[in-house]
Image 1 (tube, each protein chain N blue to C red):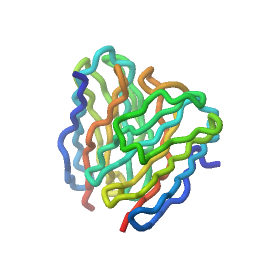
Image 2: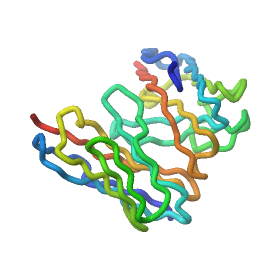
Image 3: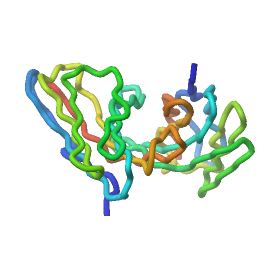
Image 4: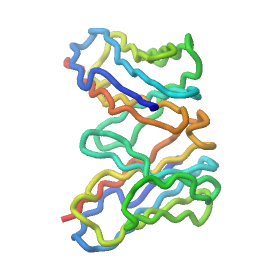
Length: 107
Length: 115
């Protein structure tokens, strides 16, 4: 059965304290793994798409990586404005969202 | 130049009423969706249309009825609203079916509160 799991559910970081969010997946025939950012009161905002193991994408302080079983969203030297919920989604037999990681960056 | 726009943003209504949420996308996409997000931020697919054809119809009460007059519009009508329908409803679109690896773009959401 296809499945997407994100961890941790919540993460609190000090400003400048780098860390990683995890998205583990089990899907038949991965056609893409997607990362989104969602701010309170807003819709999910697309960040990255990864299509094959070994692929990496970067945007400012964020870097997404992909293996055959999981993806990481690395946040380098985070700032308070990086606080948001980060959602992972995978395209397999269907399209599945994870339950998200709520990130809080403390000044 | 909003890509996916939905109205209204906030909707407070009484139990038993009928309401509609409208959605439009100007991205030229072929596929549109309605998602429901619960209090734990989980996004659950409700419906999807591709070129005005219903392609995903998840297990939702038949009080919920989507309608796509053209491929740029997907509206959601809800009959006989219940307290449990209170949630955030997101409209979204993608170039083609998301399960084929196409990126989904979301609207800003419609906050429905049933009292």
